[in-house]
Image (cartoon, rainbow, N blue to C red; front, side):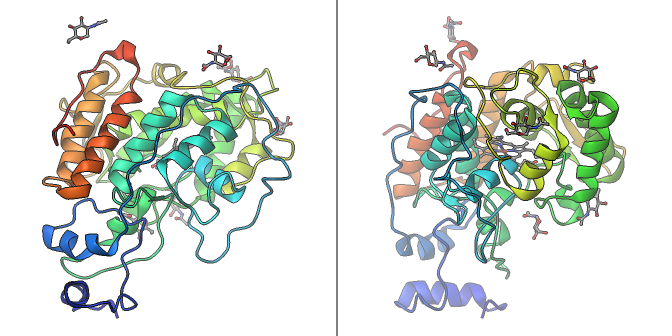
Length: 379
Ligand code: HEM
Ligand SMILES: *[C@@H]1O[C@H](CO)[C@@H](O)[C@H](O)[C@H]1NC(C)=O
Ligand SMILES: *[C@@H]1O[C@H](CO)[C@@H](O)[C@H](O)[C@H]1NC(C)=O
Ligand SMILES: *[C@@H]1O[C@H](CO)[C@@H](O)[C@H](O)[C@H]1NC(C)=O
Ligand SMILES: *[C@@H]1O[C@H](CO)[C@@H](O)[C@H](O)[C@H]1NC(C)=O
Ligand SMILES: *[C@@H]1O[C@H](CO)[C@@H](O)[C@H](O)[C@H]1NC(C)=O
Ligand SMILES: CC(=O)N[C@H]1CO[C@H](CO)[C@@H](O)[C@@H]1O
């Protein structure tokens, strides 16, 4: 059915008829990068939703039991979506997120706050950054991974429905337990890489993953990508998310009652491989945001950059934001990343872009004092 004649078929189906059983664009499919013709065909089939209100901070923000009787672990069922983020995967497998892996940004923010005590601003920024590039801005839905594959020239390609698996806009290279996109599967748990995570935790953390291990392993994964991945890209936003994610296992996977901020390998295996809370898991004792990132960065500072001409050609990219130019993270993201994906949005798409970009800006710390951008105007 999804043969080479697919684009013509798609246009025809949507333009002429109600035979939507032939092909339905997934409600969570990203509209990013689609041509106007494709958007014209797809938008009328989607029920548009105004972005919901963005959740505020938790009322009770201390530690509490998270693996409770209302949030039992279920193995994934056929059709359920899981992706590159062990945090979101685990939340979905315990029902803090819809178990099928398709969620609104508000559900994601609620879940990461409730289940892990991620701080409100950080949750907002990360969620909306991911949602803007990988989610469906008309239906207000995002998939936490990928599922179906559609192919065909000029068709809504795999990226449209890859959700958080989509490479290079949010998902990126040099992950701790996932291989680089260049090597094919860029989002599944990779046992070889996890073995290295365990090995580094033994060598540098006495068997536990702490910030010392985080810095060593981050450096190791960057070295590996430089030496083996000709397409290695470590520019913003990946530059930031890579360091942030290196801190997450310490912040969020360690029990909130444990004064030692270090993760055991048994518990790491549960989160990373099995997408499962340890029994009796209690979330972090207070809301945690972008803490510890510089601690992971400082031992091996590197400039944001990429392999420009095959392996071992890592070259700094002065147009990429880094830790010295924090507002550029936001500016780059809005103008280059989002702007590139949505050059000329119209109607509800434009309206929702404006609303969601405002929410994203609200996730920035006021002390950073970044200038708000309005590439699509104001409402
Ligand atoms: C707030 C919404 C969140 C979104 C949208 C999100 C999304 C993602 C994505 C797309 C990746 C893949 C990046 C890559 O490695 O290429 C990732 C990685 C990761 N996420 Fe999340 N995440 C969120 C919150 C969390 C939370 C709360 C935790 C911890 C409880 C977490 C833990 C991690 C870890 C540890 C990785 C790195 C995996 C690795 O390098 O092997 N994330 N996340
Ligand atoms: C946690 O809640 C307490 C009590 O409401 C509040 O004073 C504190 O600011 C909150 N912490 C954060 C980081 O939101
Ligand atoms: C896991 O990652 C390693 C190192 O990047 C890679 O060589 C291997 O092919 C990956 N394995 C799978 C099953 O993807
Ligand atoms: C991590 O653990 C190792 C081994 O116990 C220890 O030497 C190191 O100081 C720890 N690092 C941090 C940041 O706690
Ligand atoms: C594993 O997680 C459980 C539940 O959060 C915790 O009680 C236990 O101390 C952790 N194990 C280790 C060895 O850290
Ligand atoms: C924030 O930036 C604006 C414009 O760049 C500047 O006028 C203002 O003084 C800055 N505020 C703070 C608190 O730094
Ligand atoms: C862009 C993208 O999603 N890249 C790849 C990530 O991994 C999956 C599964 O192997 C591939 O299908 C994608 O092409």
